[in-house]
Length: 386
Ligand code: GLA
Image (cartoon, rainbow, N blue to C red; front, top):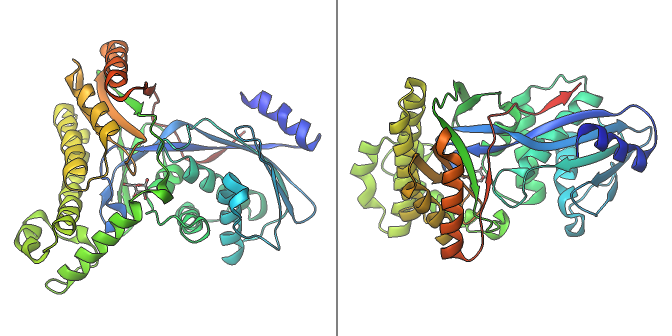
């Protein structure tokens, strides 16, 4: 649906009057995977597709939530917000509103219509998109838009951690809220310092490949990986004063790794430390326009996520392997939490159609169903559309 159609839909639901329109993107991570919660560098960017939010303030304390993607409509009283399984998708905006109230933001009743273009369960951060969208709406409508954007990003993450109960790091909400057109963000998740880098891919383009294996973050082994990293950190801290695994250089890690007796724990920590260095190098290579080397780092990242971190699985491994066999593809890797969801590939622009056809066919032969492909430029972070 385009914005005009969405406004018609909004009026059907809530009647005539002023409507404000907001947009919040999805994201992909170029490199730096599973290290946001290990104090490492990540390098994500916002996408051009995302979530629309149409909204009108109400005089009372009621928030009505509807979506063009789901039949379920939810009404909540702001004085009485709690997590409810049956509220499904509406728990994300509810959680953000609750956290904002707890943190002293003003808020009033609203009629809201959500419409998302991010395939959900694909690992392109449809939930972070909805969270930051809600935070920006509440800040704009009731707080004169004064909040610092990073503060809105942090409270969106807090809502996901404490209200929805998914122990994610900060990368997704940061990419969604702080994204800039045509730029990726190198974010140091330890200090939250960040730099933008132009995504100039020359004769190449980014292809997003959905394995169509659904990935449900809270059901996955995500929290188990976090616990394994914490276990490694506790052991290494006894030898060296560090706050996070990614405070270590690869040389330092190599000297200490024997302390980690359990193989799984050692492997997880090794991935974190090496991925962190890879991400910094990848940022430099992209800035220098050395795309072939950038592509190689993407592949190394995938291999480490497959062999050391063990979060890929047959579908992601197949799509990456099949991609790398095709002419014109100079790098590919899983993106996001893993266990399904999406991978990205860097492909020569004039080979893209051929690339998609071949990967689609070969993946379907091996896995039994087709993947989906999306071509998206790098988009802008959450904003009001005027
Ligand atoms: C999910 C989480 C992020 C990050 C990635 C893995 O997307 O929400 O915080 O940990 O997985 O890099």
